[in-house]
Length: 119
Image (cartoon, rainbow, N blue to C red; front, side):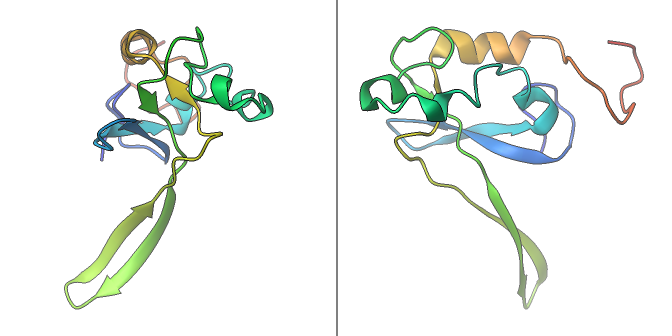
């Protein structure tokens, strides 16, 4: 699985899920998640009306960004990575425009020096 923002296979912490259809659009690595500066602040809102809005601009949220819980399941075909997530009232959401800007923004960190070119 590759990060929908930077394209690298890295440690994934969040999915991008369309709120109305439930379709998974992709996943975000922990480095690209850090581009969402207000992600941690969303849980403090406490108001149901603001929790369903884009955490960047306040427009209606179209995409939820829930945390993934990964586990390894052992079946007869070998180990399989299984992930679960829940979309709750406090799950951060983004409008279409801010999801697109996240996907087009240059990667801001490279802590493991995994990229060939400098940032």
